[in-house]
Length: 384
Ligand SMILES: Nc1nc2c(ncn2[C@@H]2O[C@H](COP(=O)(O)OP(=O)(O)OP(=O)(O)O)[C@@H](O)[C@H]2O)c(=O)[nH]1
Ligand SMILES: [Mg+2]
Image 1: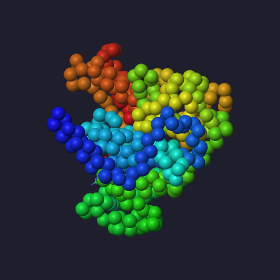
Image 2: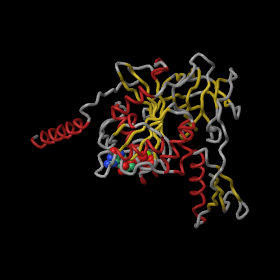
Image 3: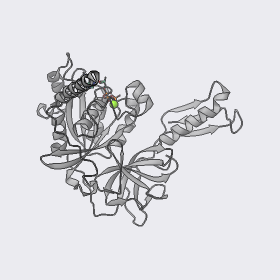
Image 4: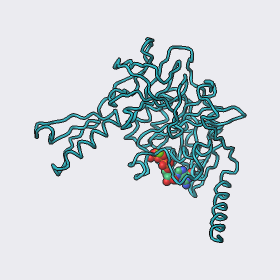
C-alpha cells in the first residue's frame, strides 16, 4: 500500500514537472465530438508547411505544436511523432512529408491549422515542392547555432517562388553556442528579412511556441477558395493501406465533397466512389464532409498509387471543371537495377519492391526477364 502511494505521488510530481514546462500553455483539446469541421469558415483556416535545412528541428517543432494544441499528450513518450516510417524512426530523419490538422483557439475563435512537416534532406526536396502546393505560407526554421545552410536557401526560394508568406523562426536558442543575433543579421543580408519578423524559439524546451501559433494565425492568409463553386481538389500526396488501397491527400480548392460522392481524375479520367474522408489529427479522424480550404485524406478504392497522380485535380463526375494549374507528371531521376544475391530471396525482394511501388507513386518498377524466366526474373529495374 505504502509503495503504491509513493509511486502515485512520484507520478504526480513528474506530471507537475512536465506541466510546469508548459505552464503558459492554453490547451485546446476539442475533438470532433465538439466541433463540426465543415462549419469552420474559410477565414479561420491556415495551411502551412515547416521548411528548413536538415536537422534544424522541423519535426520537433511539429511535436510542440501538436502538444500545444492538444492533438497529442505532452511527453507522449515519442519524439518527432510525425516521423512514422521505420526508416525515419531508425535514422532520425524525415523522408516523407506528413500532415496534421490542429484546432487552435485564438482570441475566442477556433482556427483549423493544417500543418505539413517536410523533410530537410535535399534528396527529398520533391516532398517539399508538392507540400507547398497546398499551402498559403511556411515557417522557415533556422538553427540559431548553424545559421542559414544550403536547404534553407533552396527552400526559401521554393516558397518565395510559390508566392507564399514566410514566417522566419530561429530554433535551438537554448544551445550554448546559439547566436540568434548573428543569424538574424544573416537572414537580413541573405533574404532581406527584417529582424522584427524573426521569432526565437526552442522547440526542444517548448519556448516561444505560443508566438509561432499566433504568427500562423495573424500573419498567414486564409486560402483563397470558393465553397459554392463545383468541387475541385488538388491531389498532393498519397499512401497505401493494405485494406483500403491508395489513400489520397487532397487540398480542396472549391466546393464540398461528401462520403458516397462519385469523383473523377482530370488526368486519368478514371471514376471512383468516395468511401472515406478523414482529417489527420495526427491519427485519422473520419468525417462525412470536407469543404473548400481544408486538407484531408480520402479513400476511394484506388488499387495502385499510379492512379493517384501527384498534382492531379479531382472533381465530381457530374461536373466538368478547369484542372488546377501546375500539374506535371513526375520525371524519373534515379535509375537502379536490383537483384538478390541469393536467388532464394527472389520472392521476398519482389514483394518488398511491390510494397514500395504501392506506397510511393514516384517509384516506377519494370521487370527485366532477359536473364531469367517468369515468375523469377533475375533483375528488377526500379526507376525513382
Ligand atoms: N537543443 C535543441 N535541440 C533541438 C531543438 N529542436 C530540435 N532539436 C534536436 O535537433 C535534432 C533534429 O531534430 P528534428 O526535429 O528531427 O529535425 P528535422 O528538421 O525534422 O530533421 P529532418 O526532417 O531530417 O530534416 C534532434 O536531435 C532534436 O532533438 C531545440 O530547440 N534545441
Ligand atoms: Mg523532420
